[in-house]
Amino acid sequence: MKKTLVASALAAVIFVPTASAIEIYKDDKNAVAIGGWVDARVINTQGATEVQNGASRINFGFTRDMGEGWKTFAKIEWGVNLVGSTSIDNSNSEFTSQSNDFLSTRLGYGGIAHDTYGSLTIGKQWGAWYDVVYNTNLVNTWDGNTSGTYTLNKADGAINGTGRGDKTIQYRNAFGDFSFALQTQLKQASFDLYEDDNFPGLVDGVSIADSNPIATVEYEFTYGGSATYNVTADLIVTAGANIGKFEADYVTGQSVSETDLIFGAGATWGEFNGKGFYGAINFNKQEFHDTDNLNRYIPEAWGMESLASYHFDNGLRPLIGFNILEASDDYADAYNGDVFKRQFLVVGLHYVWDQNTMLYLEGRKDYSDFTSSDKAQQAAMEYSEDDGVSIGFRYYM
Image (cartoon, rainbow, N blue to C red; front, top):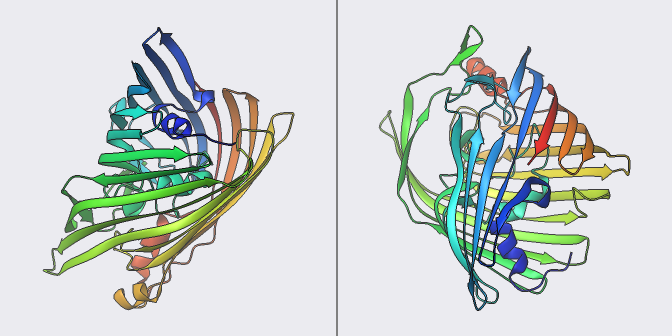
């Protein structure tokens, strides 16, 4: 759709999609909305069948009209644990032991906006990079693993700001059909990398991950930006980049100081929740931006995600997607000739019962290549990628 001034950019920051938000209070100055969804599924993968929580969440959005075109706003979102402490992780299809906390923080930020001058937000929020690749992150069970969003072995992208970035300051504005976002993370974060973290031993169906850290990583400030242009009512193109610097000190005594860089572009045709055809694709090139399934940094890689669907009048929406993340020859040089090529096909059928209720069936076929001369390492790499089938129910607020 055509967009004018900052209205659309501000809406993206403050509100969740119409299908998942209910305005619960409004007066001449203030408005409060509640949103989110409940998603429960049964998934079969890794030779087992489990009930899984489908990233269920609840959020509250607050806006206040300050007059003369100014607004202040805030948003808080928590992940909701529906199934207890043990489930199959929806990003990599493996058994993981998750937090017993019923609620966990996903987003939390506040900001100020003007109809002409744009918006400024501070807190934990979706990164500018997500504007470039969000268009394929719409599959319920398997997605986002090759777009550079959920980095450091399928985490939430908080460390380098490409996903739900921590301690982020972000500015957005729009002019006609063009909008943009600029951001920085004002922080110095430190975390550990663990050996074989995605090749745990199973004890009574619960994973016992290796607790031996192999390195401590420190990140400095990160910077990102994106641009979006509505070419026509149906066609949207996006582009952006994100950069940061980190140092890793390994227990072997080796130290690495590198620049984390990703850049890329995307294109979208149609509206996923609208009737008819929807198609989306994005590409990225990255350097020291992500880690492999053994938590080793990937020196250089390219990635692609694609998605196509058709929403029929009777509510059925078949979809298909193909994702790939392939490391360059620098990866083989760094790790004794190892090959890292994550690639998989996703097919699904959604039944959109009404605007707020969905039933779905989705399957993944893995075509990855994790060749290594060390067969134990190869098995560990392959373990966290597998075929799978899920059937679920999503109830939007």
